[in-house]
Amino acid sequence: MSHRKFEAPRHGSLGFLPRKRCRRHRGRIRSFPKDDASKPCHLTAFMAYKAGMTHILREVNRAGSMLNKQETVEPVTILEAPPMVVVGMVGYMETPKGLRALTTVWASFLADSVKRRFYKNWYRSKKKAFSSHANKEEGENTDLEKELERMCKYCQVIRVLAHTQIEKCKLRQKKAHLMEIQINGGGSVADKVKYGKELFEHKVPVDAVFQQNEMIDTIAVTKGKGYEGVVTRWGVTRLPRKTHRGLRKVACVGAWHPARIQYSVARAGQNGYHHRTEINKKIYRIGKAARPSGDGKQGGAKPKIHPNASTEADLTAKAITPMGGFPHYGEVNEDYVMIKGGVPGPKKRVVTLRKTLIPQTSRAANEEITLKFIDTSSKFGHGRFQTSAEKRKFYGK
Image (cartoon, rainbow, N blue to C red):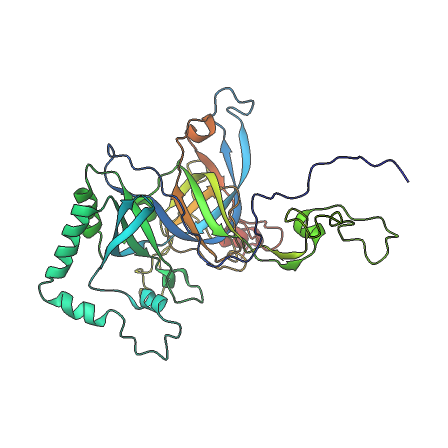
């Protein structure tokens, strides 16, 4: 038997303990960006749905880099992001123990998709959520104005309650995702309250929150893998082939004393479906809807496609959806966000996008992105054609 090293780096990070199933399906924002009173009022987060991945061709514009002025191919993730609807507002007070919610106000109308969020079983329920509140709103609602005045007087942090329009994504789910989004900027709390009130029952598009070339953070729950052993879960080395009673194990789980297993020893258990935040993801493009939900079929014909995957170098009129659709997702007909690299979670999972917490000064962050080509060939096999028209022309049909 060959000589074995006496020391080696440990396998797997202890920074992500406990490796257990996440309690929530939606990525939760634990920290919002620091407020800057010099900027106008703006929202700091958004929610989108992961559709799939493709690749792009672009020219690198980074002085000092060896790739400068050369073409490069990079992987990108497409997130479908229909406009979100603001339906409420929450005011927080700063206390020695952290933030404390003072009051919450709601808009007069809430869609059924977000009302489903307040029920375990929608079809058997009486569907009376917020009905008394809506009746009160029909008259002159002095309670709302009183609560807004209390917010202006006592609160330091204002967040709006906004939900996704999940019905526009054509997924099986009908229940919208609801989240708090912090309002930053503005000279005073009264400005934030006024800004939030004006957004009530309004649709907020993704390009009103983020811009192209911006660096953002993604927060999501990773793809679940179930119960797995130590070799897969922690990356420990397999034992020699002739090992008795299995070789995908940890040979020694600890000394006699202390007479218990240390927390740092690799053990089998849940792998995946963990809450993860990934920072510094660059936005390569924010595309407008290819087929907005409002565009119905006129005279039996298909609604016209808005070519949102064309570039100056590639003038082919095509939408971002690849031929045959994104595998396990389908078509992307609404607004979309194109992000460099990967994003946690499987297809169809809701992903929370947040403005970056740290000032971006690197050359990569400040680089202007100009796309030359976006690949829309089939992702199911070896894609050969970019559009169905190109395929028909090639086969002479």
